Length: 337
Image: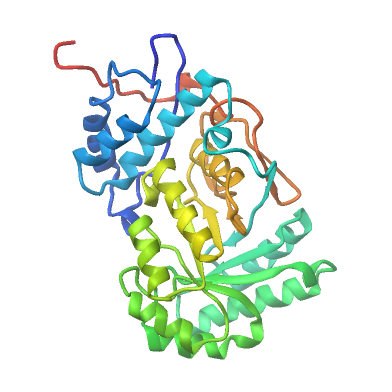
């Protein structure tokens, strides 16, 4: 977003996020383009009316809304000479200790990745599961042994993420069998809409249950808490629809004393920087803001990981520099030019 004073604000979200938000890249671009036309020529003295206008213009489409919400916050914070974290209420953290996610792959490779992550300073290791009992167990066993063999292993939390792969009784069966792996939590064991299933799992296993795909926006967070369906929550800007609804989600969780994580979806550095700014202004217990390292070439710079922690940028806005020469740009203009 370009202002008439020359400032530029950027937003970024993952395009192929259909399994979480229902969006595909073409839909994100189309909806964001339509919503952006509502903002052209408007003053930025107060962005609340602009965010409200976008929210009322179309139902859902959280990815497109997040894209524009992030860009708005970036450019307004720059105009004020402050960080987005300060704009959200104040920076509580200068470093965010992030978890390390072990993606699908051979069990020996999973163990090596966990071992290297611990040596780099990560203290939460999350293993993707959902490939079937034997394959999942093989990988969990290998990672658990790798953690226990490390000198700092006693300070490391092992957890798992099923991404909604199981049925409730199936989840209980697996998780009871895996109790000796001492999982810090299991993330999204059943489908996103199966709130009763989440509660069933929570009531029948020893480890805490975290909602991710189920924890979309403020209404869903409130429902999960009212149903006592989970122990923990995982928040992401792309699900929330931007910083504004994310603030409401954090407030609901904090009022209910439910621990939460601020994360992202292996997006680029700019989207990760937005999550970092949100995390810096939050009272989150956990963070998952390392995924941009798995993205290939990207036209951003400004984020740094040190000792398993993300350093919160000190500059204004999102704190990330963009190389526009490496972007493919589409400009939205009024029909009258």
